[in-house]
Image (tube, rainbow, N blue to C red; front, top):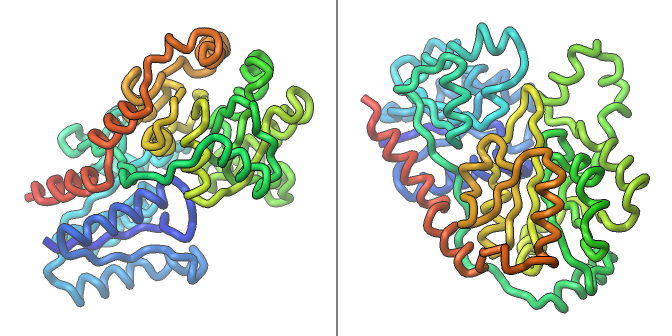
Amino acid sequence: MEILFVSHKYPPATGGMEKQSFQLIDGMRRLTKVHAIVYEEKESKFKFFKSLNKRINKVLKDHPDIKVIHFNDGLIAAFCLFFTSLNHVKRTVTLHGLDVVFPSFIYQKLIFPLFNKFDLIIAVSTATANACELRGISREKIVTINNGVDISPMIKMTRNEVDRLLRKKYQVASKDKRLLVAIGRPVKRKGFSWFIENVMPHLHNDFTLLLIGPISKPVNSHRFFNALPSFMRRKTELLFGLPSDEYSIEKQIKSQIGNRVIRLGRLPSADIKIILGVADAFIMPNIEVKGDMEGFGLVCIEASMCGTNVFASASGGITDAVIHNKNGILLPPASAVAWIKALNNLIDEPQTIDLNPNEIISFTRDHFSWQKMCAEYLTSFSALK
């Protein structure tokens, strides 16, 4: 079987969708014959989309044995819905979350229902699949395939070695501190500012939160954004992944807890894994945001593969990534009392945290891997008639 993959979420850009796209295409090359049209930042995104129909048709003409064309997110799938020259091949799409719930009347009522034209809809989580069905996608066309994770052994370092790394490379004094780690972009649904305001002040004083991810200018500092009508600002934030929580994060850090929250910015993957390997907990404190959702929660299983205690909100697709008391602890979204109690118990009642690092890693390795994900994609593609 020959398959053409089309994606505008791809390295060198970073993020969960970019990582999934790369691993899917790379992994499928080991299983079948693959062609790919991906955005690699060698041109403007406008030019990429403008020439997409022509490029797809050329690949299909040059490789007439292609049976499936797969669009790896809802935006690029929506853009290609009306390419009439693709009707002779099976068309499939992966949906990740926001590309299902994006709060636009035109998108929800006029565009998204047309996704029934695709031969197969792959949802990255049960929550994403349910959101598709709720919006009129035929259940028979939907299959859920979870994202995977790199299951190769990680480099282990002692806590003292990590303390030295943090001090020398990042000027962070972490010795004798309880380390909490959070990773992601500063967007509202991630719940970072909520956690800093409502949970962090009530944790034991030796807890320090290391916040890893891009540090951006607050979205309201952009003149273009401020010029938009108010009803368009939220949609613009979501569509372009703008840092909607940046201002609140910085405000809470300055007014609430001083140096107990440290923003490290973007870090090399190797350093992230090393830090996670000694962290007392990884947190993903998502909150419910209308018109947005966490499609899966890839960083949770990445932390699990480091043997880290994962505490995550039972929100959206996170409940597919974190299985309670197996590779993490699920907590109610925006419940400060539950979060405070669970994290303070790491010190007060550690025996209540029934998670062993080796068991966490073993469970995650058995249930999530890029190889498993790719095999399930191939099975689903092969079943198309």
